[in-house]
Length: 236
Image (cartoon, rainbow, N blue to C red; front, side, top):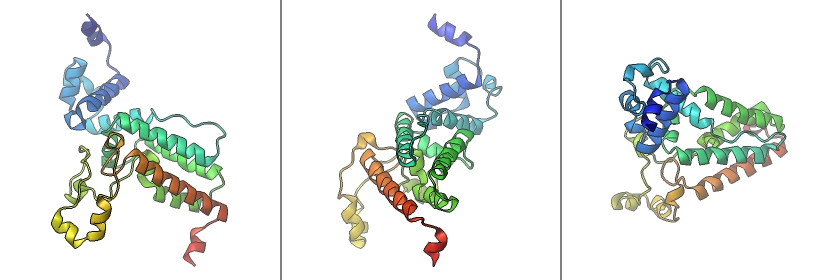
C-alpha cells in the first residue's frame, strides 16, 4: 500500500530533484541516469522531461538542493565567525552528499543557489569593511574551501585528463621510484595520519586539515584587513 500511495503522488520538479539526490547519496553519482531515476519514482523516463530538460539540468538542480541545506546566515554576526560558521556548515552538507564536490567542479557555470551563496560570502566581506580589491583576492585564496572542501594538489583524475564526478581515492605513499627522486614529497606524504571517516573530496581533505587551513586563511585575511592591504600597495 505505501508503495502504491508513493506512485500516485504527482511528480514535481522538487520531488524529481530530491529523488535524484537520494539516489546519488545511496548508490553514487555514477549510478544516476534518467532511466534509473524514473524507475525509483515509478514513472516512465519521458515523464521526467516535463520537469528537467536533460541530465545537465538535473545535476544543476541537485546541486542547488544540497546547497540549500547550508545553514542560513546569522544576522549581525561579524564577518569572521559568520564565514567560518557557514563554511563548516557547507562541509557538513558535503559529508551527507559525498558526490557533491566533484559534481560542483564538473559544471561549466555555477548554479543559482551556488551563486547566491558565493554572493553572500563577498557581501559579508564587504559589509565587514573589506575593499572590493581585498575581497577579490580573498575569494581566490579561499578557493573551494568557501564551499567546504579542499581540492587535492595531486588529483589523479585531473592528471589523467578525466572530468566529471568520480569516487574519491584514499591518499597513498608515493611509489618507491618516485619517492627516491622526490624525497621531500615522500617525507611529507606519510608524515601525518588522517581521519578517513571525515574526508570530503579528495586525498588529505579530512576535517582537521580543512579547519587547520581555514583558520590559517581567516587569521591571515583578518591581519591584511586590519592593515588596510591593497593589491596596488603589494605590487610596489
